[in-house]
Length: 314
Length: 314
Image (cartoon, rainbow over all chains, first blue to last red; front, side):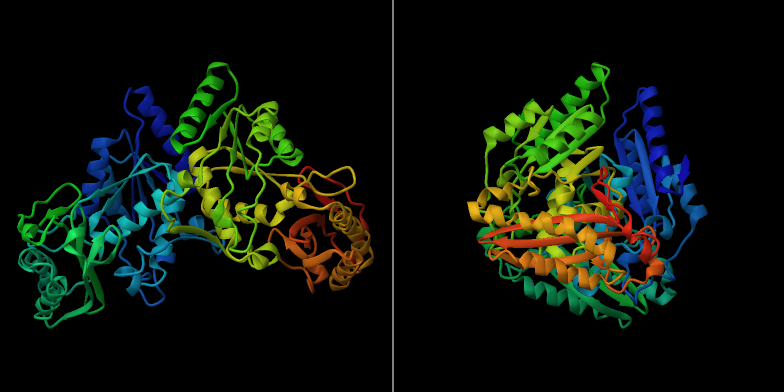
């Protein structure tokens, strides 16, 4: 495994890794997993997926300042370079790109990549400018790594929708691979930010995955009254005194537009994202679950089944 | 020469052209000339430069709707596909990419690439949204063609500055090659829009290049009073009754920020763009000349010399 701290080194080392793959008769398909580090088993699952599908695997670790708001947790975002490199090595990474902020932004950046509509709601509404920062840095990383496939976790479902929209609109020659959310045994979605949680916060945070699990039943019963489901979700989360709701919402996916009032005639083939963001103390957690709408109210009762892209069928 | 009307065909034909170059022992360096068609000798000079430097040459012809304002000349923009293809063939093009609007924008585009600061003045001020449209379509074209070098005429000097800023900021793996302005024997800068000019407009339009030529002397005499030079430029253009000034300005290049009041101590190594946009009837023409500032007021007298990038030395 090689470690690149400059863009030039990254390009060279990726070229070398491709040459090596070619020489050894392996695929030169390049898989890329962009991260902010402090890697957990969610990231590991992306790396393993990349290892299965690609002869060349690139991981980037970069805590991207331009996707944090002025009052967000940039300065205290957790880091663990040694642990990250070990996890990368164990999961078959060829090149780790670990640039400094100065390497990525040698002077104030004047260009931004902005995606409209898909970024209006959910995290786009609570974190103004966040997705501009994400789309811009992912554009940069794609131009540096030039991957064939890029792997993103569905925990940031809106991020996947934004990146897919950007890739489509700008004809970026990369295939986006959404991967399922990885959870602790008790249901908590893995996140680098879980480390911030106190013991009692950690216990109460289980309400997120529990609510999303119950949402499946509530959707099955709701006969198209999605607003009622949203209210039940909120009420259930509020049973935990430490839970401070940022948003709870039901959105069409990948449009990220509200599903409320969608005529039953337009359900077929549409996906519904139940998404939430909740603060416990200063820690903001997100979680979601993706459902497939049936082709009529009576058919919303189909049992949920976890698929590769993390879709539950309702 | 092959003609691609779809993105898929363009990618395939470029791949084939590279393979052919490789097989024939030629360079696979790919040169790209993006245009809006109605090609003239200015475009031909870009194609010839690409032929000299690249084993694979790609031309795109696409009148990009999103870079036109609602009151601009999109619907009457001149077209001549047969003539364009002949000029392309004569100048060594391997692949012409000639997409429809539907091929480039199959649904309303939600992503835009925006460059700040460099786009605030000159054409950026008179044509709101224009450079967002340019940066976005050039991003798309770069992702489709994936060139090593891309050739742009310095007549659109601000466009070159915008593209260079975008390429730098987003780490796009392409080298931008600015090429000098090509003029008629009488000085008029070549432009597809010259075809709109009536006989008398065409005669009076010579005032643009004439003014820019005189600007060299005025700069040499001005002892740092750039505002006075701007006034002389405007007054000279106004001697033509049909000339309706959109802007006349002196800007630092490639910053595209006003040069007025720049302390002499900061001149060394800076470039100055004398730029103008003038309407004759409904036809808006632009022209410019690039100068190098000396390292002191007394040294602004250095004789101008046309270089490859169209820089005159003052």
